[in-house]
Length: 519
Image: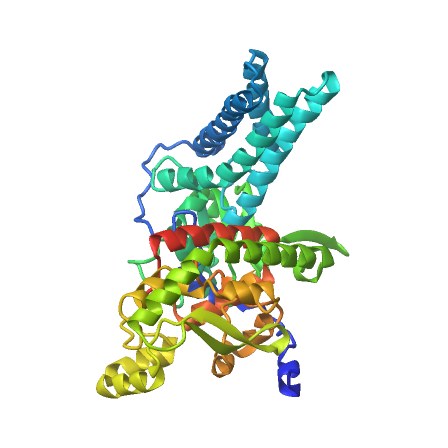
């Protein structure tokens, strides 16, 4: 049973993530391409307004149509081969109808031009649009005529393939056009404080989201000094707030982000009076970073409020997550059984001792459990580590800060490095998932000594089961600092949904294949 101190620590702090955390999260929040890009300045004379929206949408439309039509016509060939039917010409026009309906549904769901949207939100909209488009085709066929077996099979196969491929192709298209000077929409950051600078750097890196920061605007008029002064090598200052009506058309800007955090004396309502030329304005809270993925505006007594949905408190969501964990871990254990035999034999050949290693970790609600791994370290690992740190005192700081070493002397040569680099050493934790101690996706399980490093964020860790994979694992992993890991865990809990879990699982496949951030 958790101690009284532990129960007391489960009280949620007032703020979710501090404004300064944006700067920590900016380099590590996952993007479709997973790497930082060099910025290219858009040439003069580029299309603006509606033309820029069209240019930004065209590559996304082409990629989506390629998937939808390819999935539909491919499903026809597969279904015809399975059922022995010969495809007829009506299928050609049905495919076009599915493509057009998908574009219409996607437009209503914000998929074009999808400027600045989160990849998790985009994943949900793409999958739902594909589902609705193919379901509409089946429903229409059933209403106008008898639904034939081949039409039913085409709809099922084509819909499943499209829903699987749409997010992958959309991410690839964004990756290809992210640095093209003609793609994306320009955004001006209003507020040059710590919050505005963090947002500016975030969108410089996250070029795949389609918002191109052209510069920062601050001060009421040019006569006021800019304090603290901006680093001209890292930030572009465009002028004062009272010049927005000239800055916006000069730079072809359609988006503005009002970031008052860290700007002394900035009156948000006063600034908004100068933003009339901006079709799209995002106003950020000045002090706190509230859950962002599933929040929506809500009128409250004549004042705009933010409605935040806590998906973790939904019994349906909890049941779905546990069902996915149970059946996913059961299938994973059965599929990985040959690898278990190979890893056990290889480990025992290279190092005496047990093949598995169990370590006590903190789970949901503070309950302690033993997390299992393939043993990747020598039996006397603690003494080996202490001896190494005594002989290499310069490495002690790295160990204290991150609890990891890039050149860890404790790892078993060969099998140990292979299992850790591929993250396969954590496969035995599928047993922890099956028994309900862990989840497929969640914060990385921590030990008691790490609790103090979570500080006020620890109550968020206690709300969910720790996971085999999570935002930390797909966001640079060992290349990130411990503070960034804490922020990522908190972000995950505050923004949890089945779609975020799906996104992380898809990113995990890529991370394992590319061995990103593992050592």
